[in-house]
Length: 257
Length: 260
Image 1 (cartoon, rainbow over the protein chains, first blue to last red):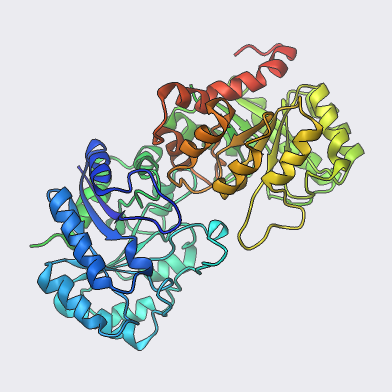
Image 2: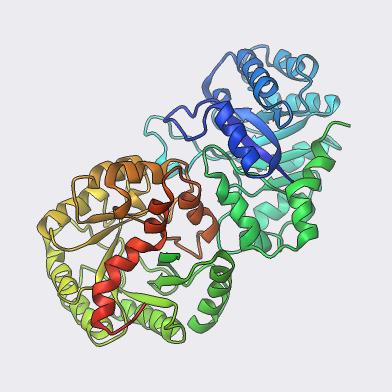
């Protein structure tokens, strides 16, 4: 039983991906023993009408993956009226979390809007996912060069919102050492393994991050799902720790009570 | 059968080559990787002098010395030093156990000054791996593109050449080498972006696609996933995971009397 915290629906803007229809994606997840998947939308990167994006995401999850997909709405706090998007995610669609792409939406985590958004999420008991990058910067479209998210302000932001759960998605290619330890000093900050590289990646990152703060994420369908599944084999975790990383850590933090 | 085209002695602790390869083999065992090709020592040097690339080759030679049943070595050369590179080829391939050549980012491979090295490697039946990238932010000065390799390949139509990383941006890289039948796509050493292997098979045919990991900076997991997760026939997966590399190495392995 695996819970995947990093899945996307709809279309990557720059090419078609295998399994980028919801039915194919659901079918592949089920074949791969994924029992629960937190899904955002690629449309959340560039579309301005995020209300419609989140409505489609909700509808797709409900109609094609009701027992599997959990929608995570996209929020862009630079858009006029973004607060209503948060309210809609929470009250209309009963979402449990929201997903942010600060680099695609051109704001810093140190901005006043982010502070307000974090406060609003904390007040409503929503978790926040922040995607650090969406692809290798060396392969980006030359007209769409997007820098990684800067997480320097995150520890301070989280300190102000006691109990707020935050997960960094696609962060493990570049977050290492002191920067990573500074972030994960807060036990409410979690990372996931989609972009974790190096031989024996999980067992090595556990030397820096407590396993209670490590989650299974695949970044499927942009990445082959097998990449993260294989990582469970390449590291010797033991059944108990593997169960925590693949299921229990996410359930404890994000599941609806 | 999994044969890994692209391994380094990095990503693990260890003061000696022996310590490093022993650790890497633990992970290879977990993932079912049977044979591994190593090249370059540590630390990575982008423009090594002859003295430096010899030292790096010595590290690899030492590493594979206790793993003859599983590990192969490619000799690391720098095309800026043609005479010294040819001498190194003779030292490690003609008169030593290595079976291929690694060319990295010191100089672009479209420059005909590289040709004596390619010819000598071909005489020895050494398999040639050329690193390539198409980087959005621009390549290093001496870093080759798949387009550069396609030009070089035209001058050596009978020599098998491996397009390392498939250019990183595989959509560009595969297009650049599609009309070069002696160029093979090494799909390792980039993110496990879904679709790379399907496009490689569609564009080149499965017999021109090679699995490699680029460990220890990369993982076996992410790179094997490119093949295991691809929507291609099982017979194609077997070719990519090992069959093609074995076929390409067979001439030199036979020459050296190595049975596999």
